[in-house]
Image 1 (cartoon, rainbow, N blue to C red):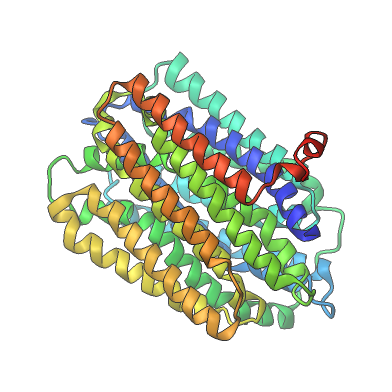
Image 2: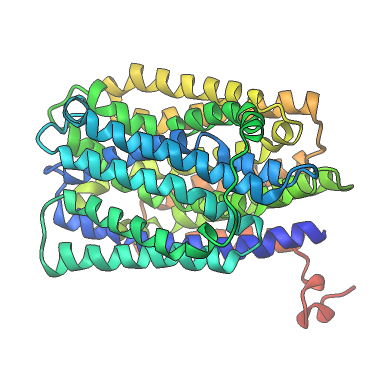
Length: 481
């Protein structure tokens, strides 16, 4: 239980910073949707560009973040040599990417549909190159268990971004979409200076033999990462090419804005990953690891289901994150996207079996299959059903990848997951979801009150089943049998 407790503690730190950060970032959604109506397509441009940058970030880090954790915990490797080799390799690739962006800026911006605004492309290109490089010192902070500094820098970056966005879009009443990208560039550049201690004070050593070993481990993770990010962002990238309506940017903006409400699942998964990944690799050979994996999976599912019910239950309130009511027609995608994010989180937790036995090719296969399912659903159904097909495509893609990973993993690295307990929680959440859908037709106050009751019952079940009050400090003595 010691490592599980450490995971919970670090997840709380990472999670708090992630949740606060995402909450602050959510302030951009009402800000942008207030400035750009759904019909203008302005938020559609932002959605589309950020989808591209998410993919490029994975390409530029090429699996070296996870690889760094794996190799820095190998007894025969010098941790600082691993760190500096990783920094140099990722930094070199990022610089080459920036050079290519400027060399081919005209044909590239034309291909992406931004021939009249090439600055959108090069500004975000430079920004994502900086972010890719900074992934490694951030990974170093996680590996060194410096969760507080990690969280502080992440929050600083978001706070400055919010401030600059408010100054331009609210105070100055700015209308130019491109300024959102310039602000991102300024914030990323600021973090380079904040990482001074993590980038200096040690001898930079580049070990070619080490890099070859790291690349042999990382390239399947790169494929896994590309497929994974395509599962999240491909729909937003290909939507302009396969949706035939004249309101393409408007529809993409509606989907992107409403999907933001569902991103609480991404927050929880990201926070869990930040705490979980270093601990898993540090204790590969420890006894009790399998039990820790099983319990971590169980609690992850429990609390993501709780978050799912809370978002669905308080949708009447949360929808005001998207300030302009023109976007509310897309709120029906939220439960679908959230369910897909839960399956993505489960898939991430399942992924450790092939990482700890150095069989990362399996991850590339699973993610590739999931991505193929997502793309197939999008290509076939987006021209007919629009952005709803995007939501269901993600659901199908993550679901397939999750199931295949589980069944293959049980053959090569069997873990006794508490399937009976997990199934009960899932069934209870599904029943409560449909009850909430039924109550959605009531008066908002009555609906929220009813949903609060259901959430309270779910929490009570968690406490009764898996968080006994007798184990809590101070008040626990009153519940001991």
